[in-house]
Length: 236
Image (cartoon, rainbow, N blue to C red; front, side, top):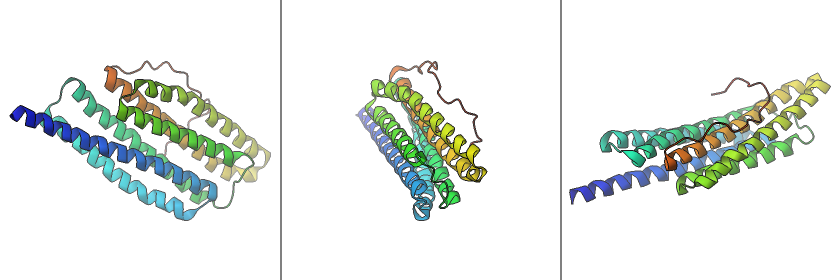
């Protein structure tokens, strides 16, 4: 009887952690959508809301990570249960960084003000944001469903995200070369695009963790990278 109680308690702990991970993922996706709108509309109120929301995401991520560590310490899981705990820690870290990148985009929208509405750029940013948000949604679904096929599809989609980023970068570079007055806005929009590309990388990281969780092995890191630009310094 006591063994059944232990197993039941362990299952309840896992379910609680899974629920929290799903909630963090939803918060990260909402933050990305709001940050993109703040950038496209130059909406200060939405931008500030994204920054405030990041604190709540960070708090829940910390609580979830600590719950996973407590599960590791008290239950001493093995085999697939151990992989679950290790995967939760990695997935939480990826989602926390997605929240940070969304916050960075919101900050850039405040710096842009009414400037930098270049022809075609807003549409391209929106398409890229939608594509990255879908990658994140699919990665989370793959994690919750333990779906390796969906996880591999997310990994494959990252190349297209890199190509979208490269196209945006080239377009912004053209605007900045044509008129030096475009440089400040162009650089801010470049960082917005780069943060979107990094969210795609984090979604890919979650998908890789799904494969590790279900198979016990990380996927081979031989996928081509489409980002051909210099890497700007990361933002916190």
